[in-house]
Image 1: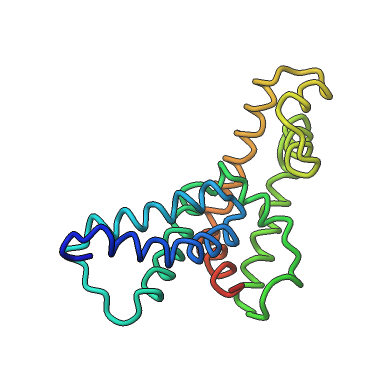
Image 2: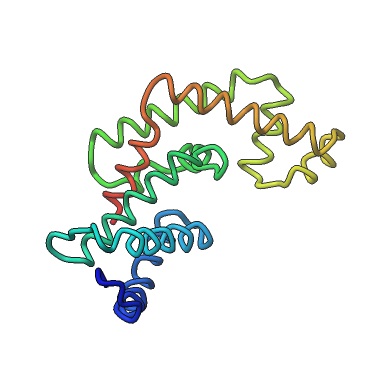
Length: 184
């Protein structure tokens, strides 16, 4: 592959794609994002083929690449893909028995709960309908007698408040990364 042999690359792609995709999809619970991540890894592999020096197992290198890409994806998209909301709903018993991560998770859950409780009543209601009852912007708007745009703005503002509150205390991305890596 380093010499530009496309057949060698195709062979590697076919051999490793499914396993890498499954690992990313399991961690993200988003098939499209998982497929994009795996595609990015193989594109990077091909683009850097002449300079890349893999020490040890290629499979291990690719799995590590998936982990780092997943963590980076979560860091970039923590609000947009609602990982903060998912984090607030994870039960402590579902966590691996690692005391530090459990404590960080409890702290994050407490911060989310406190932040939501300090929101104005209408924003709080919109947030809960969106995140707990999984209603769309339109369904929330119809239920509350507001516009879809107002519903969307309330949710965006609520998520910014939560992200800000979490960012001031603990590194949410590191909590999620620890959870994902230990869950394996």
